[in-house]
Amino acid sequence: MGSKNISMAVIRRLPKYHRYLGDLLDKDIQRISSKELSDIIGFTASQIRQDLNNFGGFGQQGYGYNVGALHNEIGKILGLDKQYNAILIGAGNLGQAIANYSGFRKAGFEVKALFDANPRMIGLKIREFEVLDSEEIEDYVRDNDIDIAILCIPKNGAQSIVNKLVNVGIKGIWNFAPIDLEVPKDVIVENVNLTESLFTLSYLMKENEEM
Ligand SMILES: NC(=O)c1ccc[n+]([C@@H]2O[C@H](COP(=O)([O-])OP(=O)(O)OC[C@H]3O[C@@H](n4cnc5c(N)ncnc54)[C@H](O)[C@@H]3O)[C@@H](O)[C@H]2O)c1
Image 1 (cartoon, protein in one colour):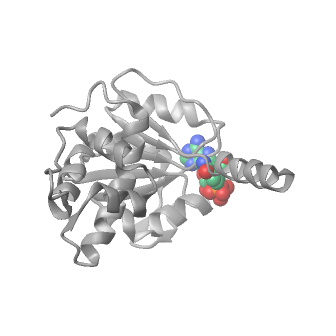
Image 2 (cartoon, protein in one colour):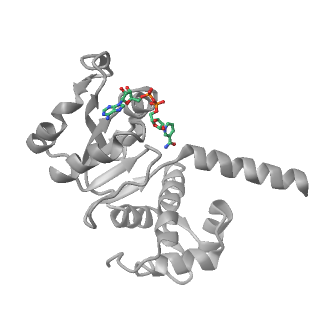
């Protein structure tokens, strides 16, 4: 059951299915129809069936979905059955907020070290971390089993840090820097941009007012 050729639109919906199914499990709900799932998630029942058919279905006629099994399967499709080790670069406001959030660790993404270039930041204690000098990133990645780099630095300097990370074998970059990074094909960059999201909110509010 590969996820090659699956559209990004479907892949972007999977974390939402995973979250809602997790909420159902928390409420001890073990079984759900695509209609009921549709009512809570807000996608149509046919959209849900189509999405899940990409991965081989999971539903049973007349029964619906087994919530635990579906949650588990979607977790596997998303690669959440593994543990990921991450480093975080840029221990400023955003970096600290991310390092302080325990939910990522609970989901299997563990921040192992924080790096910064500012001498005033290096050596500071943030949670259980002592901020390390970003000059040491390459050695650290070489000596530790690091899968993901979380980039919380300004756009200046981001590409050169990324080049170094790629050279030492980092395959995943969670990028908060407002820049389109250039990486080889075997390296995945996932951009997060809260400003773009905020501007979308602003647009939709404006549209509402004009109606
Ligand atoms: N994508 C988003 O949604 C989003 C949201 C907020 C901020 N940002 C971006 O994230 C960046 C960080 O925001 P912040 O509020 O934490 O800023 P900040 O100034 O508090 O922290 C940035 C930290 O990065 C360090 N740094 C700068 N260049 C570095 C480099 N080359 N190597 C290592 N460390 C370096 C700085 O010393 C500083 O400690 C901002 O530039 C902003 O553009 C993105």
